[in-house]
Structures are given as C-alpha cells and as structure tokens.
Image 1 (cartoon, rainbow, N blue to C red):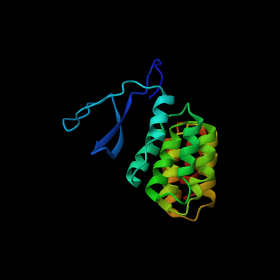
Image 2: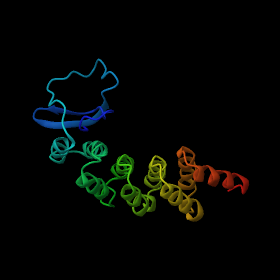
Image 3: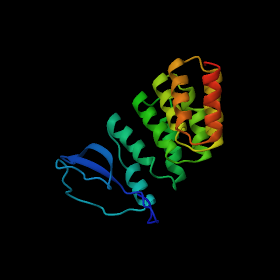
Length: 190
C-alpha cells in the first residue's frame, strides 16, 4: 500500500467476490503466511496509495465491508481524502462497529490532525465502546498532545470504562510525561 521505502508497509487488501458481487473485504500483512484457506485468484500487484485509495473508494457493500474498507483506508496516510473519509465514518449515521474501526484507522495516520479528529469526535462519542477505542487509538500516537488528550479524559470523563482505557493508553505511550501522569494517578489513587 505504500510506495517503496526502506521499510515498506506490506499489506494486502483482499476482496472476495461471488457471482460478480463483493462479499468480503479485509486487510492482511504480507509478512505472515496467508494461510491454506486463501488462494490468490487474481492480484493487481503492488499499488501506490493513490491507486489503492481509488479502488477502495469504489467499494460499497454491507456494514462489514464498510468497516473493513475504513480499516484499509487507515493505511493510506499520504492521502488527505482518506483521513476525511475515515472521519466521516466517525459520524452518528455509521454503526458502532464502523465508528470503532474508524478510530483505530485514523490513529494509523500518526498525525496531529488525526489526534485532533480523534479527540474532537471519537472521544466524545455517545457509545462507550467507540470512546474507549478512541482512547486506545490515541495511545498509539507518540505525541505530547496525546498525553494532554488522555489527561482531559481522566480529569473530566464520568465514564469509568473510558477513563480505564485512557489510563491504559497512557501506559502505551513511551513518553516521560505519560509516565509522570501515571505515577501521579497511582499516588492519588485515581
């Protein structure tokens, strides 16, 4: 999915078609065996992000297909329209599963804008499951702004599960400020 670099992102988007109709869409790492139950019938070969993005935008289908399409768009960090598409999937008109997938996909973009979108939209989602996914996703973005976003949840959220996910996400950040905040929380028994 990425242009060739020193460490290429080796992912495959797998589409299953039966009778001319898309039945499944998923992503797989090419660094691991695909398994005996998967047989490559047709491959488009290596694609740059622009080509892959165009193909994904043409895909429509069930809620599961939409969830997997959003997940695949998370690997398109060089395409601004991919981030916008993922953010639109965070909207209330999407299912809870699609919104959770969008939170994780957006975090793969590893940008301040992705962090802002997660904080602005997903952390405030009415669904605890989506807000929890957003907290975990924020914990994968190594930035001081991530610590501040999670601190805001810990200081203000009345949803226990979201606070718990935020504390866990802080532990995933390799930043000294995250460590210091965790120590403070332990000492004050919050």
